Image (cartoon, rainbow over all chains, first blue to last red; front, side):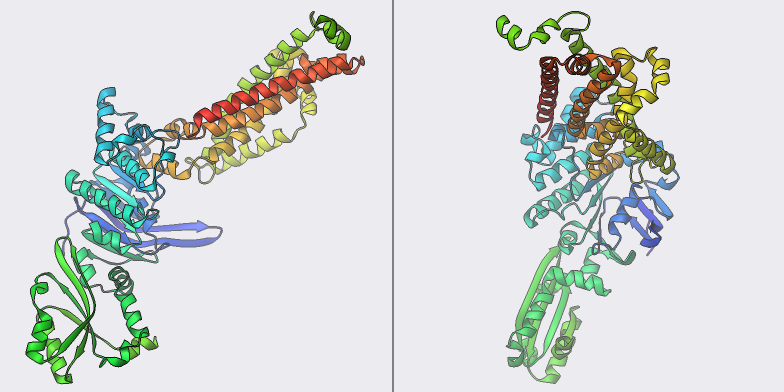
Length: 353
Length: 229
C-alpha cells in the first residue's frame, strides 16, 4: 500500500544512548507515517522505546539517525529558533501532567500565550474558552495542587491546545489515572480529534486506551516496530505474539481460557473448544441456531465479547461444540464460510505449556 | 527605666551614642548585611543558574564550563572566612579603596557568601520538576525564557528559603568581619565588650544580632508561606 506523506513522518529513526560505557539502542530503525486527522496509537510495554520514539517527533529527543518530517518540514535540519517555532505546532501532554505549581489553572493555560500577539482581552477569552472546552471553567483560580489527577490532565490538555497546534502528542497521559478518569480523558481527546481536527499520537501500554480512540496502531517491542495497521485489522487479526497478547488482555479471553482449564468443566465437555473471531455483519446471523439445525451440534457459549470499534462490530467468542466429529468439521467449515475466523483450541496442549 | 538601665547595663548606656556607639554599630551591621546580601545574591543566583543549566541533563549542557565553575565554587567555599578576609586585602583595596571599616568588609563578605549561595540556588533550582522544564521545551520556550519563566518562578519559594538561610549566615560573617576592623555589632561585642570586660555590652550586642536574625527568618517564612500553593 502506498501511503501519501503524512503530517508526521518518522523515517528510519535510531536512538542510541551511551551510558557509562554501555550502549542502549532504545529505538531501532522505526518509521511511521501519521496522516492528518489520525489518532495514532503506539503500544508496547515499558522499556519498549515508545516514549523515546514519540519524543523524537518534537525533537525533545534527538535521533541518532533518521529523519523527522512534520508538516513537510524537516525538523532535524532546523535552527534552534525555527525548531522552537515548529514545536508550538506540536502540543504535548504527559503522564505526570507537568503543570506549574506556582500558577493557577488560568495561569497555566495562559502560559504558552505569553509571547502571542493577542490582546489581553483576546488572550483571556481564549483561555476561558479552552477551560470550557475541557470542562474546568469553575476551576480557573485554583492551583494545580487543589485538583484531582483527571482535572490536572484536563488543564494540561487545555495548555497544550493554547498555541493552536495541529498535532497533539500524548505521552502515557492516562497511565497515572484511574480507569474511569482514563475513559473520560480519552473521550475528551477523541472529541478534540473530531471537533478540532487535531492529529493525535498517543502512547500507552493499555490496549483499552487504543481501542477507545485510535484508528491506527503501531506495536513496539524492544525498540522495534513489530506490527502496524488500522485498528480493526490489528484487533481482529493480530499477527505477532505481543500484539495477540495485548488484544487478549483487552478482551479478557486469556483469563477465561485459564479459568476453563483450571476448573473442572474441562472433563465434562467433549473437548471441542473453538475460538471465533468476527467482524461486521456476521453478528446478525443466528449461528447457534443454525449450527443446531444444520449439523445437530450444540454450541455452548463459554465466553463472548462483542464491541464496537470505529463503528464496526468486532467479536470474540469461545464455544464448546458437542456433536459428531464429522459434523463438527462441517460446522467449522460453515463458520469459516461466513468469514468467521475459527481457531480450535487444544486444551491439553495449552495445559502443558 | 533609666534607673534599671543604668544599674544593670551601665556600659551599654555609656556606649549607646557617639562614633563608636551602639547606634552606629547597628547601622554598620545592617549596611554590611544588606549591601553584601544584594551583591552576593545577584552573583549567587547567576552562578547557581549557570550550574543548573550547564549540567549534563540541564537545558544547555556544557561539560567543561560546568566542571570549571563547580570546582571554583567549591574552592571558594572551602576557604575559611577569617583567612579570606586577610588574603584578599589587596583586591578589596582595588575594588572599594579601603580594607577596613564596613565598606572594606563588603568585598570579603560578598566573596565569602556568593559561592555558598550559588550552591544553595543550584540545589533549589534542581528541585524544580524536570517534567515542567520538559513541557516548557516542548512548548517552544528558549533557554532564557525557561530560566525566567519556569526555573525562577517555580523555584521561588525554595530560593527565598535559601536566601533567608544565607542572609542569616551572612550576619554571622559580618560579626566576624567586624572583629577584624569592619565595625558593627561584632566589633562592639569583641573590642568593647570582651576586651574591656564590659559583659553587658557583649550580651546586648548578641541580643541585637539575634533580633536581626529572627526578623529575617520571620520575613523569609512569611514570604514562603505566601508563595507556596
